Length: 109
Image (tube, rainbow, N blue to C red):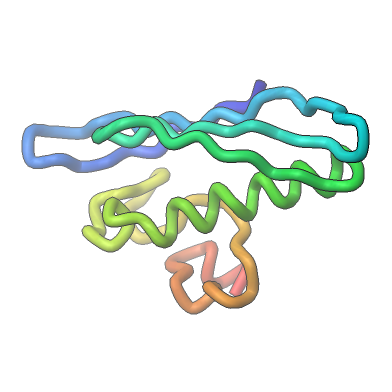
């Protein structure tokens, strides 16, 4: 299992936002990675699917990046990993790269 912890600066103080990625699972025709983002208002679970485990991992990482960058938590400017405004270290699909900030924008955009 992989884990990263972001931080959300709520009105009452910092709240951890854990992101976990489970080990890959092989199905009959594809592979999958389940992930969960532990948002302050409730967890969100998703999946990345691929022909092999590598593709499934890449698509899970992009799904996480999409969930982060399209969230109200990101739009509020209160979500961070390290320094505020530096990004979260997850890739996103090309069609939302304009949402990237900080190091994510510099290296991914």
